[in-house]
Amino acid sequence: MGCHGGFNLDEATRRSWYNPEAILKDLRSGMVFVDVGCADGFFSILAAKKVGENGKVYAIDIDTSAIEKLKQKTKAEGLKNITAKVGKAEDTVFCERCADFVFYSMDLHDFSDPARVLQNAKQMIKPNGQLIDLDWKKIEIPFGPPVSIKFSGEQAAGLMRSAGFTTAEVRDAGPYHYLIAARP
Ligand SMILES: C[S@@+](CC[C@H](N)C(=O)[O-])C[C@H]1O[C@@H](n2cnc3c(N)ncnc32)[C@H](O)[C@@H]1O
Image 1 (cartoon, rainbow, N blue to C red):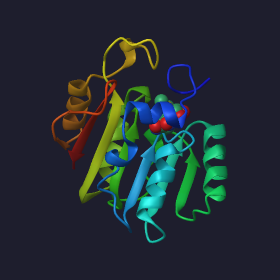
Image 2 (image 1 turned 180 degrees about the vertical axis):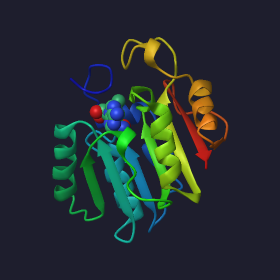
Image 3 (image 1 turned 135 degrees about the vertical axis):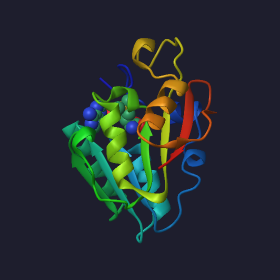
């Protein structure tokens, strides 16, 4: 079972939905990126290559086998700048005011306590850093999570504002997803 509503998400399918490089376009060498609910780290690996050896990626997921897979991929790619950990996003603050980006990919709606996860992001993000939320549009489609558990862009932006973030507009990220950038 994959984490995307019951199917495993291969790279070609993901790339047919949205452009991952465009989503990470503001990441620069030396930056710190936190991937919350990283699964096997599709975005963690991309981010680690972008931030380079002077940068850092922190990745967290509750799924032990996914983190194990990420660690194997990290080793196979020869990357030395990813710290991957099994744990709950609700209980995880990797470091204080250290992150240029905290990132959620298709998972804010999955967390049992999204408000607490957002508070943790607030603690981790630098004053000039950003929260990036990529998630499913709240529409009926024959794959992905059920529409009942998806957050609309406005719902997600509202949660971010309640946590004290300033949100930019909800942008379109392909046919099935939206993207929100928020500042602490
Ligand atoms: C839909 S998948 C998205 C995975 C990844 N972000 C991606 O783009 O492929 C959701 C992930 O969130 C993780 N997850 C769910 N609840 C979590 C929690 N409370 N803390 C940490 N990870 C969690 C799941 O184990 C799963 O790997």
